Length: 218
Length: 85
Image (tube, rainbow over all chains, first blue to last red; front, side, top):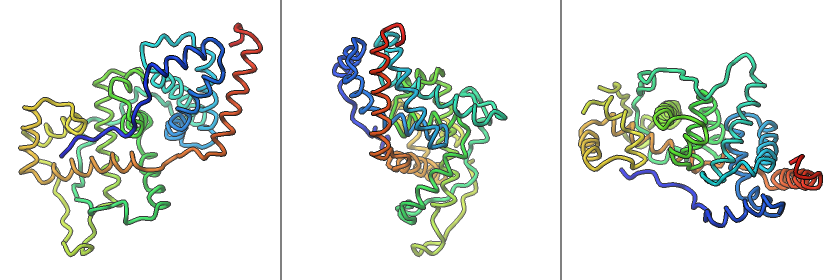
């Protein structure tokens, strides 16, 4: 089985540093180019965390404005995008806390032990499971499934697996240790897999084979 | 190798972040353990489905509206001077 490949090619860092430098010197056009480069990513991250469209719109504005106001704090030790993601995640978590004051939302929350992530259901999926559903149905399934994860797992999964940040960049953006990122990522992936299995597992008779439920891990 | 040990290394394996020896041990386990093979394969599919999904795409009209608002606020701050930035 091959390793998962990264999704997006990255823009050249030197070009990006030049844009950041120009923006620091007051070139709003250069900053606008940085907004164009990353607004989609920030929106996606914000909506995954807040689970609310209006909040995500606010986060896009607030995060970019905060970045603009603090450009002098950006020293170029990390990539601009990692620095921006860190700001956006903080803004999004603040929104989430405001909306759900009854629940403390923290990236440090450790909801379950590792044993709880061990697969209970080991059923194979059909060959192209996502094609069993319309685009709209699939979107609904994926949204509902990821929304069921604790915020701390969801955020790590989105940064690593959807946005393609490295483990180190994710750790830096979230102020977590590398082992903490890896542990949350493993649990997020296994929990999503388990939940998606309800929708994607091979149907009895669908391809002439009989469905057999697995009996768990050994 | 036990299944729990395999699962412990699953993320590193899927991300290609393991040494050759551990990889060989994991692949040996995968060759005979059907459950772990299924978990590994469907976890990989889970990641790919989310990565390729169009969840939360930013619509172009909203994108323009947000960018215009951001840029105009940046310009206002610039005019107000560095102490307000």
